[in-house]
Amino acid sequence: SSSRLRDEIVASSFNFSPNPSLSEQNKASSFEDALSALTDALSLREKDLDEREQELKKSKEHFEIDRSAGYGDTSPSDVLNLNVGGNRTTVLRRTLTSVPESMLASRFSGRWDDSIEKDKNDDFFIDQEFSLFEIMLNYLRNKANVIDKYPLQSPTITRERVEDFYRMLDYYGMTNGLYPTNLAIHTGSEDSVEIIGSKEVNAKEWTTFHLVSAGHERRVKSYEVRLGADVKRIQIGWKITKDEVKFVEGNTVGVGDVSHTFALDLTLSTYLVEGVRGSNRSSGAPKRNYNSFRRSW
Image (cartoon, rainbow, N blue to C red; front, side, top):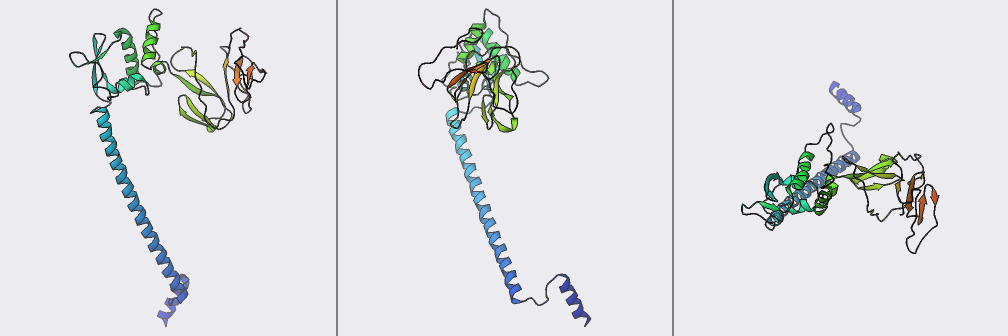
């Protein structure tokens, strides 16, 4: 009949029979079972995620309670009244704590508010010269307004007061905050370097870095290098010229291997002076050497 012919044509178009076999029925049943099992697994996964979300929420609540117990009811937007050497000023808490890990940031984090000296008006008392402290404070204020068009410059202090100012910065752990020096790639591929912080990097290939001053010309007189556990090769050195020191891209030449540089090669236990290697010294007392300007190191 026409009805039967129509059913056969439709069945042929979809590649199945109007009367499925037992094998096809088993396949359909297996598909439904797999779909049901997948739905159950997704439901369990969703339940697990909900439980983890609740745990994170509780952990955050406990953290806020612990923080409140340690720091009190404080906020970065708190307005603090200061008495600096008899001169009163007002500042936001986040301004004083804008240089992480400094003593100034720790002191005014909120945790020690009850123990900081206060005057009769209950203002925080700072026993420093206001003329010097104000310079540091204004720099921190201006730091919040920095844009590329107007980069922030470090303070310029008169020769008569510069040591007093540096001494105060060092006391508060603010030297690098006002006179920042960062690591920058001198030679090498940016793709092979992980920048972790302003002075912390992970170089997967041979790369030369140099210290770059930002907003000032204050010289670096000393520095400390901390190495990770899996360092394969390292050279630490200096250049003895104001001109640019160039390296050949793509090779293993580093500081100390080219003119106007000298370095310590910690991998080979030797020293380098303008490309000339000294004697290996695996042990014994440090040896004093002189560069071409007769400066000892």
